[in-house]
Length: 480
Image (tube, rainbow, N blue to C red):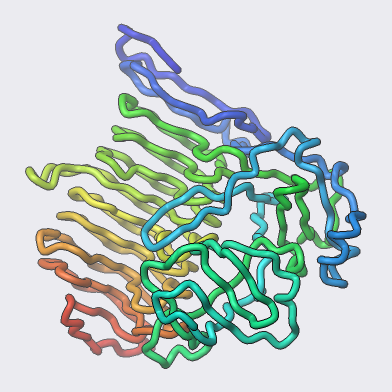
């Protein structure tokens, strides 16, 4: 806690020297200084603030356990390295939690090497497996699937980013879910984007038997061992390689009484939940930051945030960019929040339909301006509330793993009025999975009174869909 009661106009600067600064617990900010507090890199030096410890490369060894060697694919045996996490003092492995539509959850322990995030070993490595049948109907717990190489015979139970699994019968290729899925299950058509049918496909994660690609890892929660296949050029680890694991849910939490706090010029990484978590943030500025390798949103400010600004920053390899809300919809009092001149990309690392690059969750008059947004599984900019301005953004290659998706998207209420979408360039919002087409601007359900003008749309199925009646506008011609 920083305190300086009764001293008016006393600005405080916390300057971070070059290097890696490991947080051993969440940094809680609470102060009553009448001036401001600025956290920044000293004289532009390269500074990394990290939400978990470094594991020295010398502690990794080749796999010797006979049971693990039987499970590893043959090409992986000479490549995969292991480390005992308990011996490193790491006991909190987290949980691979069930996630669902519109529901944010922390990640379990994650791994990065030289700043690049690894992914949990998965099957298949690319895309998904189709559901062949649903023996108990669309609301049942069982699904079946086809395989060609019997690799599922080494599966011992799993949970993906969406559902927990109770049992896998490798003889009949049947998976039994631990609980009913709210939206049901259905036969899959993955690989055929021309069908209107949705869903029906899956993948398996956190399987040692599928650790077959550089950049993958697996955590054995019984032996407390971490296994990984390095993605360095030599596919091994040297003393100079930086291996970090995430331990903290929130790296930095800004309490409700905090105001006039600013963050500038450093990298924040390896947080399981949020990079920055604000409670009713007031006059908080994020400028020239890099925020990466986050389990959920880089910045979460979903309550009543006022005069919060994110500008000139890069957010990537997260599961969401910034989630923000603020202002009073009853009196139409502006939040004065601004999201400007940011580069937000590769923001759907762990799940798709909860991780938007920019999520204006509610409130009044948040301005989203001049951002470059791309490489996302679902929506680029999603908004609810009144009098928001979405202007001069470049949004492209989004909705990559979704159907019925808008690059700029809103839905839900007749009273969300006065919003403006103008002068945006939206392109390559392609339709690559089964289900309804994707759109440049999607104003769904009872969304009303939106002014959309002077936008440029290119290479996408529909420029806009308006309302529940799904009035589709086909006035998009390709640019020369």
